[in-house]
Image (cartoon, rainbow, N blue to C red; front, side):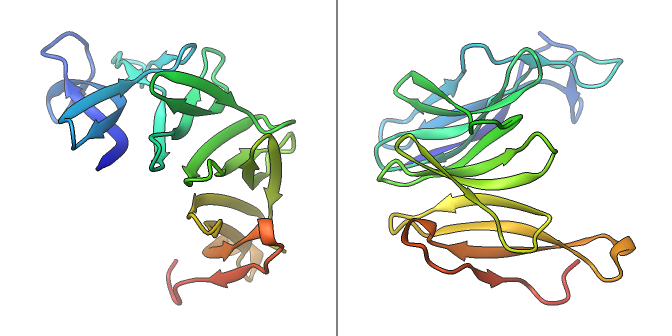
Length: 198
C-alpha cells in the first residue's frame, strides 16, 4: 500500500519552467494509501538544477526508486557538485550510499532483508551492478558485457537487471538484454532477452 516515485507539481506561477504550458516543480514522493498521505522526499545536500539556458526550473535532484515492506526507500540524489549518490531513507532518517571507489552510485531496489541493488560507475567510466548486503558490496558483471546494472531484488535475493553487449559488426552499436542472478548463493547468471528488439 505504499509507492514511491516522481511527481511534477503546478507551482501556480512561482517558477519559470513550463511543462505543457504550466509551471512545475518535480519532487520524489512517498504515497501511503493506508493513511492517504503523500510525503515529499528531500535529501540534505541535494541540489536543485537549471534545465536549459533560457528557463529556470527547480528540479529536486532526488529520485526515489524502490521501497520494501518496512518502508525503507532507496534511490539517488545529485549533490551540489553534480555527483550522484545512492541513498537509504526511512521515516526521515537518511543514509548516503556510495560504492567504494565509484564516481557515481544509484540505488534501484531493496528487499525485506534490506539487501540493496543498483548501478555504479567506476573511475574508467564503466557501469557495473552492485549488491549491498549489510556493509558488504558485491560487484555484479555479466561476462563479456560492456556495462551491467542491477534494477531489482526480491525476498529470495534474486536480482534482475540489464546489460549491454557489442553488436556485430561493432560500428552498429550495442544490444541491451536482461539477466537474473542470485550472486549471494553463487548462482549462475541466466540471460534473457527479447528477440529482434533494437
